[in-house]
Image (cartoon, rainbow, N blue to C red; front, top):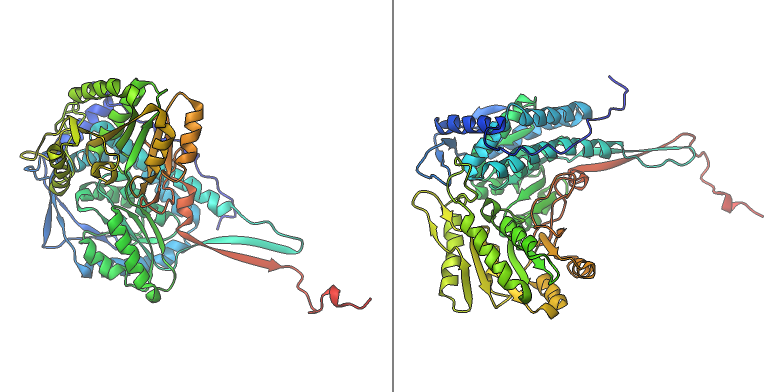
Length: 543
C-alpha cells in the first residue's frame, strides 16, 4: 500500500476542433459517419458488466432521415431493473473501498480515449442519433464530456484533501463516504456529455449506478459505455438499461437501498419523482439525494445602449444552434423600441442564410428536432401563432416531417409579454420577442423576472455599466447562469458551472465541485490523544 499523497493531472479544457474543409478531424468524422450509416447494429443493455439482449426491440433512426435504420436496441422490463440494482449493490463495497487514485484513474483514461480513438465515433453517433451538426457535436459529445471527466477528477481530489483544523491534543479528520445504496441516473437526449456526466460524477465518488438514458440517446450512450469499459470500469459500477421510465421508477423509487437520483429532463417528470420519493421516504435506509436540472425559458435582454449587431448574433446563435434543443437556449427576448427595426432586419437576414438539412452535410446549420413527439408539440405553437391576430411570425414558420423532423427557425413578435410562447418551454427553434419602450428598462427587468416559472439562463446586452449592474441585481434569482454581453448558452466546464433555480432545478452546478459533494456523505473522526480521567471541570473548584 502506498503512503503517498497523490496529485492528479491539472485539468485544462479540451480544445474545440473546427472541422474546416481538408482538416484531419473532418476527414476522420466523415469516415466514421459513413461507416456508422452503413451498418445496422444491435445495442444491448449492460448489467453487471455483461451485455443483455431481449427479444423486444426498439428502433434507432436519425431524426433528419427517419426512414434510415441505424440499429435496434433491447427493451428491458422490471426484471432488468431489479438485476441492475442487484449488480450495483453487489459491486458497491469493493468499488467504495478502492483507493481513490485508482478509481479516478479510470475516468482519466476514459477522457483520453474520448479525446483520441473514440472522438470521431462519439461525435458521429451524436450527429446521427440526435441530429447535432459537427461543431455542436464536437462541443458537446467530445469536449464537454472530456472536460467533465478531467475536471471532476480534479474536484474529487480537492474534496478528499480538504480537512478540518485540529486543536491541541486532538486529531480531526473527515472521510467522504459514498452514499449507502445505489444511485439512479436518468439522462436526457440532447447532450451526450450530460448523459455521460450524470452516472460518472456519481461513480467517481465511489457510488454504483443504474443508468437509464432517453431512448433517443441510446445510440450515443452505448459508445460511452464502450469507453467506460475499455477504461477499466469494473462490472456493476455503471449499469445501462433501456426500460420505460414509469417501469424503472416503480422499482427504483420503492427500493430500500435507493440513495439518490441524478436527473436532467422535464420539470413535470422531476416533480413527479420528488413526490414519489416523498411518499416512499419511510422505506429508505437513508434520505436520498435529489439532484435535477429541469429546463428553462431563457432570456436575452437588450438595453438601448447595446450594439445591435451583437444583439442579433446573440439571438441567432442563442436561439437556433442545435434547433433550440438546449435547456439554455434563448427562447424569449426583450428588445428596446429604438433598436427593433435594425434587430428585426438583421435577424430576418440571418435566418435566410441558415441552411437546413441532414447533419452529414457539413454546410447545414439547422438540422432536425429529436422526434415526432417534439415536432408535433413545437409546431402546434407555431400553428396557433399563425391564427392569433395579436402576434406576428416575422421569419420562418414552416415545417415538414416527411423525410425528417425539420422545423424552420421561427421568430414570433408579440405585443403581449405574457403570450404563451414567452412563458412556456417549447424546446425547439422558436424565439419570441417583446419590444419595450426605451424608458421602461427597469420595469422590463422586473417583467423578465416574474415571467414564467423557470430560472436557468439569461443575459443582458448593454454598453451602459449602470444598466448592467441594475439588471444583475434585479435578475438575481431569474437565472443560475447569467451572461453579460453574450448569448445565454455555452457553459464551459470549470468556467461556468451550470444550473438554475426555481422550476429549472436544484442548482447543484454540473461541472463543479458542488455537484460532486452531493454524492458523498462526510464522516468526522475526532481522536483525543490524552483523554480526561476526571469528570470534574475547573469551574467546580472552590475559591
